[in-house]
Length: 319
Image (cartoon, rainbow, N blue to C red; front, top):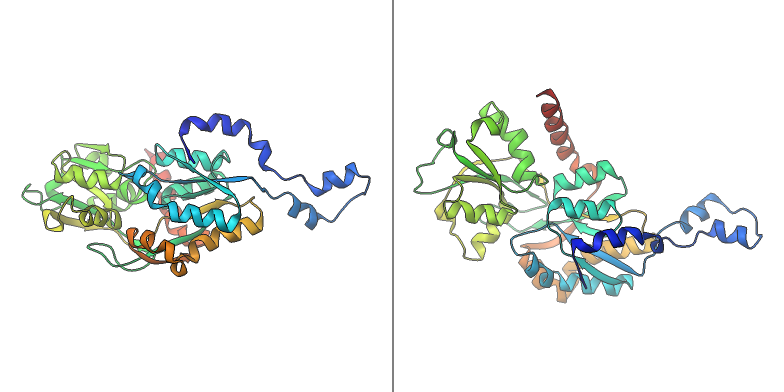
């Protein structure tokens, strides 16, 4: 079942249904006295009738819904829960869905995960995909932010871009906003807002890539694997672009859940993704995301993003 952002307020007001009846309360009602704190903690986990799953928006989020169907079907079978799909409008809407307990399982960007986790440690990362090598994408659970311009535009170097229109992805994007503002600003020795004439947010890496190709922006910062997707679909050709800069490796998009969910539910959510490589029904999905397998991830794997966020926040506070 698909949900929209319009469902959010209603869902927030009815979240009480998600908490299982605590054994402590039950024991008191029955006159059974106290119980151990471990048992009480176990009883306080959340055991909802359904789980809501969301992904950060891409150019074709509606198509992604169908792409993820083998995953949602697998999650439903393993968890025994109905899986509802939340259609996001932005990175921030997915984060807000997690923080409000409306969304239970999600795919976030590395930066949006760090933001969400800093506001609520219950947003817990458990996995990401290990990518196959592509046009710009390297093999493994990492990617790079790349700065691209169109061949024939005369924009062949970073210096050529001074005073030009630059495309960014979304304020919550790692390679499409955080990395340009922190890492690339050190390359040019100034804030990107002072280097470029103007920065515009396109809404997705795919849209940024197409915007460069159509001349709507002079250049753009995009994720290597998202750029590859546009090339693979035949919308653009690799040889149509100049690759002017690439970032150090960035951990891939984190798959997260809310930690208050009961342990058996979380274990089955993890198995939904970590066991995909052995599921014949999921091979088309893995092929579409250019991956052979998912790998387990922890919060510490994203400390590099936390360091970038701290640098960005300190820079903003100093201005």
